[in-house]
Amino acid sequence: MRKEILDISQLDKSLLHELDAYIDSLKGDKQEQLIHVLHRAQELFGHLPYNVQLYVAHALKLSGAKVNGVVTFYSFFNEEPTGKYTISVCMGTACFVKGADKVLERILKLTKTKKNEMSEDGLFTIKDVRCIGACGLAPIVTVNDKVYGKVKVNEVDGILEKYRGDHHEN
Ligand code: FES
Image (cartoon, rainbow, N blue to C red):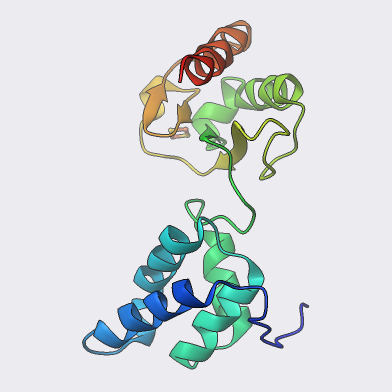
């Protein structure tokens, strides 16, 4: 278990002030609004390093373990810095039986990265996620907001190339 000692020395104070202001502006039971606070914190800091999680925990009078449990449960929260494109591979049952694990493996190989870590070029973060409710299109891969359905392993190269290309054009 990680230590619950808050150290804000490395955190940007102006962003912490903005987060405080957001928390102050909330009406009603603030603990109930933990997810909103974490969303705002992620918007401000880009991701949710453990010290930001502890800061939120202190502000809302919750334990660090509780806040960390929420952050790790929801795939839209990131503890590590993320790449320009977040690639999510659905690992729900329907996608899994149609080969999502092979698709994920190929994506990790081509981006030379591990799950939940940013690729060295800063372009990609790869995640596996639970069923996103579109099982008829299994296996599903999303890249930021774009959804790719019935993805075959040999299509992965082309999908990644597209985003590498878009990046070079920018
Ligand atoms: S299992 Fe992948 S969308 Fe449902």
